[in-house]
Image 1 (cartoon, rainbow, N blue to C red):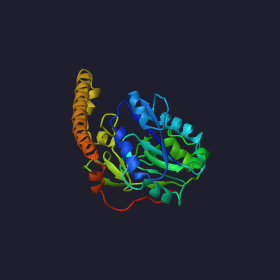
Image 2: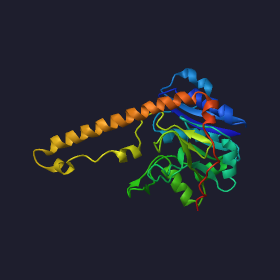
Image 3: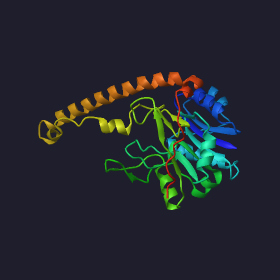
Image 4: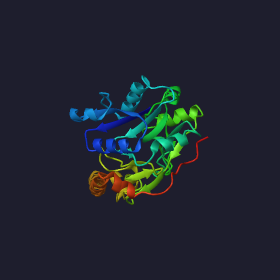
Length: 280
């Protein structure tokens, strides 16, 4: 059995899309467990099990996993899937192939300033491995990113658990993108699409790194003029954020409209599965 754990938050925009792609590309028996926060109850029928929950994304994933483990057999597959992510090819076959040489396969977003952790937009392992790891999607454990700063994010604690237990995992890497944006609207391993920011403002860590440095930064510390300069810099940054988010939101809506036709969408894609080497 394949157990899918997914979270939809304050929007039903991806529910039917995700369900259609799951039905199209998973040919083995599967059950979908979901958390639906602030979503109309009529959508509960689209899932096998709906677990009531509110709060952070990682906590919901951990809760869904606990419910799944209550009924899953050791060799059953546990698939974590963001609400705005879905398979576009034989994702189970690709996952089983990866699990022949490691114990977990997941998206790794190298393009997000060098993120190192398994990302919950897509992750597959066996129920027995998740039990053994005492899997945890919470952030906390950190790594040094490309600009030299230390960061943590959802999946940080899972990275720690994998490293501490010497458990190998196979990164699923980005293989296709529909725009020049390196974070949103991407395909991984040629088998999973992740829209990105499907439930929140479309502004990534990469976007923030692209934001121009505030003018007259040093003047913010000067007596008398410091506060007005700081306010001006904040407003300038806010205007930049609004413009960048608006541009990405427009592209997001256009791509989501194209996704509505699974056949047309998959016809855009080609190439072989791309996997990173298993970790040591």
